Length: 77
Image (cartoon, rainbow, N blue to C red):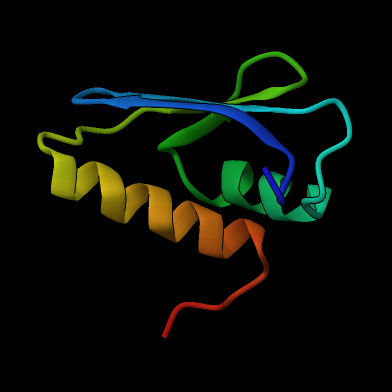
């Protein structure tokens, strides 16, 4: 909620992240993600589509945690 994410839906074949109309995420963070990774694309103006295999709950949580860190401006360690 703090980042302006309305809904997260991840399953075994990817999913979507839906943003509020004015999210607290730097738009460049989303653009960078889409431009530099084939696993992500925009789905309309307010949804990010994740297109990758996430076979179990651990894989989904890891993916989500990495995305939230990216949106919050944290760099991978």
